[in-house]
Length: 246
Image (cartoon, rainbow, N blue to C red; front, side, top):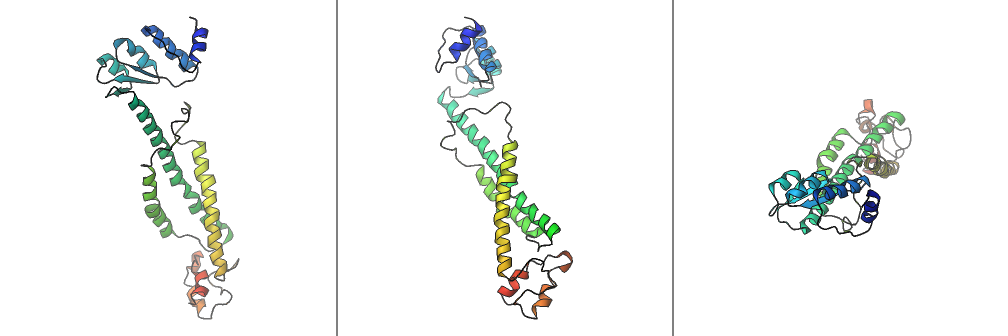
């Protein structure tokens, strides 16, 4: 059988070969890898060692396998049960996806933490978030939910998706775009909208700073407003003066 004929046979959905020599096993693995397939080979004998070594992942039998097969394999199946392979693949895919979710969650909060400081420096708005608040987010509300993603159960369709590409990385452009751009910008818009809404309801308007008095506040409020770190224009308490009649 020529390579073209073998390639046509291997392109079918289900193919069974029997009584294959080590040379033929390596030939099948070579053609499948040449077609861009992810090849897993199981075996327990000495004759299976070359194919186990050549495959993307070689799986040797732990109970009935020879020492040569175990040395050539990447993974040893301790119970010799092929169903365990399916469970291992499902668990591996779940771990991979959970790590990606963990990374996206971690980097998604960086954009809404950085943009308020940029707006504060460029447009002289009251500082929306302080350093202590950032530390509270990083050390408190971020860590525990992120760790929870690491033990999330596999998705229902995790085994229906095809294998990942050979050149796919754990942190790729899609992960960075979703974390920094999509979720980051979405969170930034939401929190800044709520922030300026509260400012507006509290009497703040564009261009007012700590040494100015919002409309509707009493004369005693001026001294309080000046305590809001006027040197750095960190007058976060401005919108709350009117609300609580300070």
